[in-house]
Amino acid sequence: MPAPELILWQKIRGNSLGVKFRRQFSVLNHILDFYAPATKLAIEIDGESHFENPKAILNDRIRDEQLEELGIKVLRFNNREVMENLEGVLIKIQENLPPLSLPL
Image: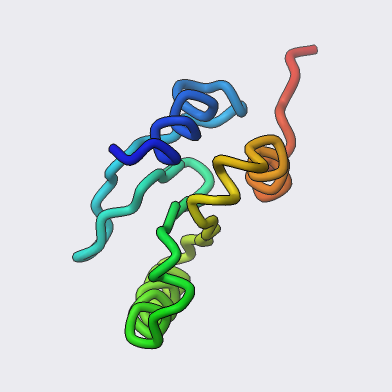
């Protein structure tokens, strides 16, 4: 697992954000970096080529559309974001999760 993925995994694994994420989860013919089945939230951590290479950009767009047709929301972050702004990445993920249910 690349370093940015490993660093993020250490922060989101288990129920640390109130939802269980799985890593390297298969949906259709896609392998998602991280996926929370209960909330249908996928997280992709991509190298710079995914944001600079026109073919990679198109492939990611098609993939995201296919996943969205299944009701899966995809959040994409690049390696640099994870390495330099981990707290911001975690905030963005939390914003896309349902509020935590606290016991009464």
